[in-house]
Length: 124
Image 1 (cartoon, rainbow, N blue to C red):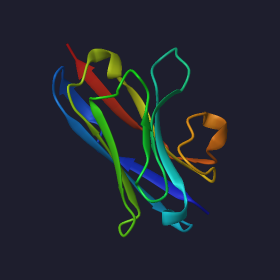
Image 2 (cartoon, one colour):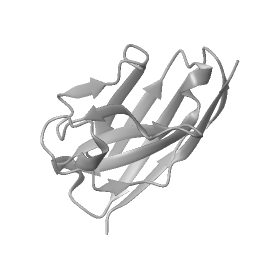
Image 3 (cartoon, one colour):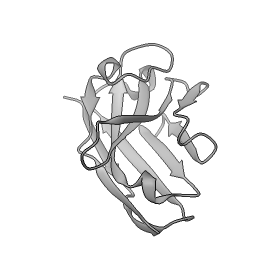
């Protein structure tokens, strides 16, 4: 059984930073792409960032490019999302996910396991 546990969310002022972590267990972490999505109240789940199995390739949504950085540590089975220059519109529940697709997928259907999410709130 694959488990993904997010941490690091919280309340921060606009312009601030947070780092989310996602610890994985249950399958060979280093073989699979890892991603972050987010969902704000009343909105659909939105792609944020993805990293391939080795960490060599990443892909970001236009809304976070240049502000967020995804990384992974395969020895710790953990993926990170460093979020800088946060804006109120970044407020959402952030979900960690893993998928078997190669490369850097961005569609929710390409991922098969999801964490329970961590709340990020950015005040203006």
